[in-house]
Image (cartoon, rainbow, N blue to C red; front, side):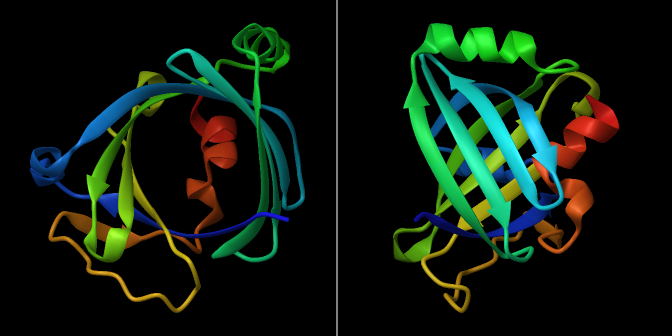
Length: 152
């Protein structure tokens, strides 16, 4: 069983861009979502994944992710209601082998930039770069599945 432990923050300014080591465009949408559960399909470059997330709390969730054929993912995206979320994910190395994933959203969410860091445990310490803004881990309105409902 997979477990995702993640902290999420708003990003302030553009200073993070100087630290980026890689980036890729992502398109995603939701086949199903409910109380603490989502089933997401995502494409990135020529690869695709189906992900099931089930909430335990805001910090930790069960996560099951499976690579699927790109053609299947495109067909599933066509089944989803509403437009897909589009964003560019930038990778920014952090201390202790951790990585910040900085998502710059596009379309109706343009201007929103969020940074996430996946942790091996809830109490893992991490350095906060100067460009990190307010923490939104506990704010469900910043879950991608909810961003999609509100703005996409």
